[in-house]
Length: 258
View 1 (cartoon, rainbow, N blue to C red):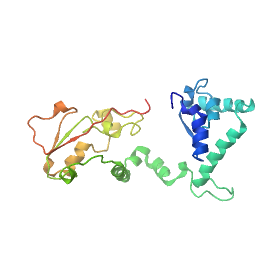
View 2 (view 1 turned 45 degrees about the vertical axis):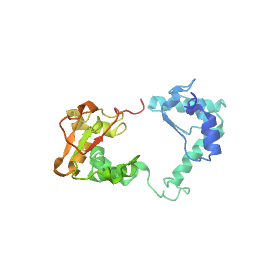
View 3 (view 1 turned 135 degrees about the vertical axis):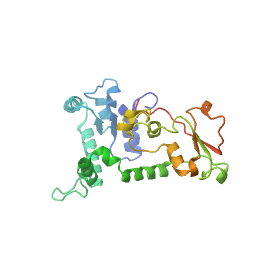
View 4 (view 1 turned 120 degrees about the vertical axis):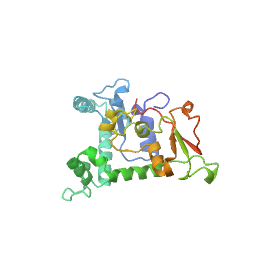
């Protein structure tokens, strides 16, 4: 929302600014049933959001989207929604499909790329099971690469004397995310809202069969296991411990939209 006005019904930002001034010619996709929060709208229809410029709606369940389609068609028939608005949405959807090669301009020619549900990776995942497929060694390596390329170093004022860490150092690891895959992974990872703890037997059996925590990773990389795990807060720093550097993993309980 901007200034308290939800963007799903804000024609100025969606159509005038995004599609008009900025020249965006892709698809504007609504969030999961977010149109229901617009005044005068519900799960089953939202004329103001259609008119604002939303092209695809996430109407979640069959009883929602079926009625949503009916109500939208009724709004077109009653001229509450202009046919040009429907044409704009359909044109954008088809344009994106053509750009990505999953829709051919010539019906006699096959698409350059198969639809998402027909691609080799999906076919393989269906064959071996999605859990096994996405927890494969290949995907683990890809995940590590993504983390390496997305980490951002904000400060290293002491230069090479601080970072990178060296294998012979004695390292203290502390914080609520130091040895917790649930906090480390966050929401929309293994599970929609995320799992607050990866240490329970249920979590280990069903959600965190694989994975390396920050503490475990440092243990693997530092010589002679000179890695000490503290508690989740500063008060848990071992009083008698000797260490060269402290790594603090601060995180929040995982969550998704709310």
